[in-house]
Picture 1: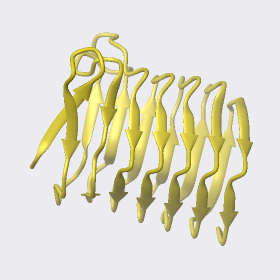
Picture 2 (picture 1 turned 180 degrees about the vertical axis):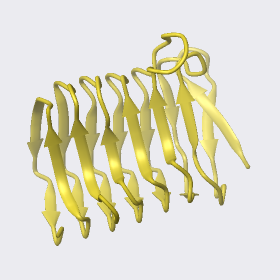
Picture 3 (picture 1 turned 90 degrees about the horizontal axis):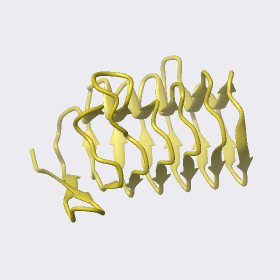
Picture 4 (picture 1 turned 60 degrees about the vertical axis):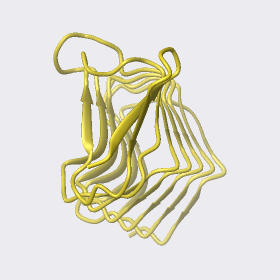
Length: 170
């Protein structure tokens, strides 16, 4: 597996190319704010393509990250955030996951989900799921198609869902 990373403060990159295996989970205590993640072709059969989670271990931030130009396929969830704020999920392709393409599970505030393509999510199948006390998130210019559900907002407030293409969801 090729993995490396970038932190804007320290100049370090994180990148995984054609891993052919499950993605990775970033939990509190292992991640520094301001990382840019460019992960290409995470073809998984794992739980997550990438998971930013501040609710496990010591409370160290999973905030202010950029996940851009990635491809997550065949996981339970493509991209998942839990207690992670001010992150940018930009121009990713998330497909054929079995639960959620992009999931803001809970306590995720001020995130931007922009220009992603989320398709063919099966099972319970939300293309984009924003649930459980998330606030001030923006969902804009995404294409969400051929999922069981398109964009699901449940128990959360968002700043805006606009200019999304949501089609052919069942």
